[in-house]
Image 1 (cartoon, helix red, strand yellow):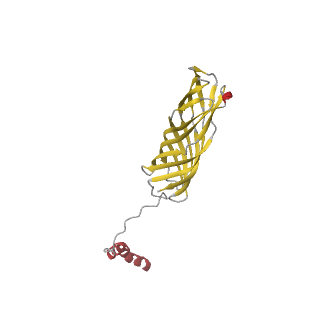
Image 2 (tube, helix red, strand yellow):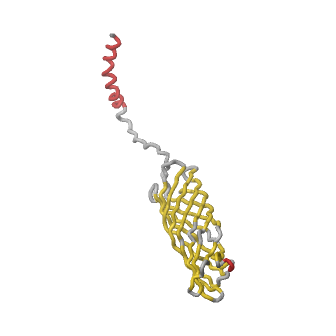
Image 3 (spheres, one colour):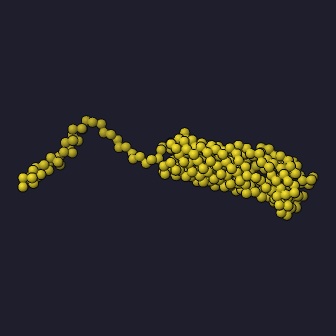
Length: 232
């Protein structure tokens, strides 16, 4: 009975205790609430991905000599490796605009199919580039996948004759899709893996044994790359 009575006496004190504590600290500064840590760092505006790329064309061509299609004549281009740099600007935490450029490879173009007896028909030095809009998932901590889409460009810096003389390959504009992932070591540094697949077509012309030759060329490369990511 006594315990119940004491409990009833203490109820008003317990009720008033929070107000009393608030009154005691009325003059103290009030701290602003701190946002919960989501584990996602504040996104940097700029980033660089630098590494090595393997360029694997899915090549083909339709050749015409003197205006007539040569049945079965096509081309072959070996896979090749080059250095790659991608410079990006983050428009918001998830959306970016990125420009990718590769060190200009020097490649041979060989005859294939019924054009195989001609051997090396020519070569070019070209610059592979792409401009892609990228959406990246940054809410998964260190593992940050992304997808991208945009135009791909091929700039031709030099043409080299082979069986075809006076070779002239046009620059090309195509479209590329991209998928990759940044694996971050900390807020600034990480490593990346990336794959781009492009639809890229061009035209070429020259002379073969004195006769004019033209070709509609399909390149359609798959570009696999990897290296270091840096954000700033």
